[in-house]
Every structure is written in C-alpha cells, then in structure tokens.
Image (cartoon, rainbow, N blue to C red; front, top):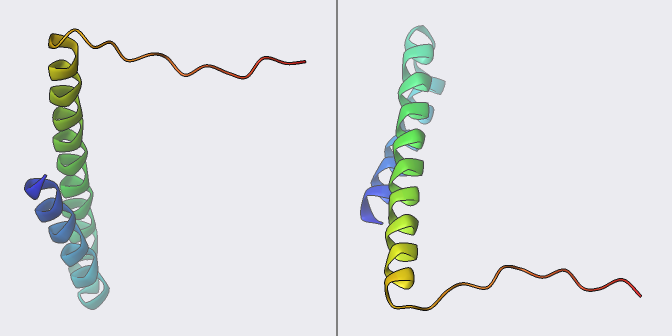
Length: 70
C-alpha cells in the first residue's frame, strides 16, 4: 500500500508541474496518468492477494443479495 501512496503522490506532483510548465505539460500529464495506472495495478494486486488468502482459509465470501420486492 505504500507504493500506491507514492505513485499517487508522484502523479499529483506531475500534474502540479504541468500547470507551471506549459511547454512540457503533455509529457507531465502523460507521466501522471502512468503513475495513476501503476497505483491501480498495485491496488488490484493487493486486493487479489487479500481475496486469495480468504479463499485459502475456506471462508467463502457471500455474494451481495438484493432485498426481495414485496
């Protein structure tokens, strides 16, 4: 989860720099998007690992149920 914070912080810095450097703004915004993508990949890996651990213990997650209509 520390990597997610770092990636998001770097993306924020890139966006801030893009505001002050108009000639490099497209490159900096592209880097910001790349860091956001890396943060999403890290989050997905983290939650996949958590869900895999839950499945190994034999505890199955129950699907969300909708309330029955009257």
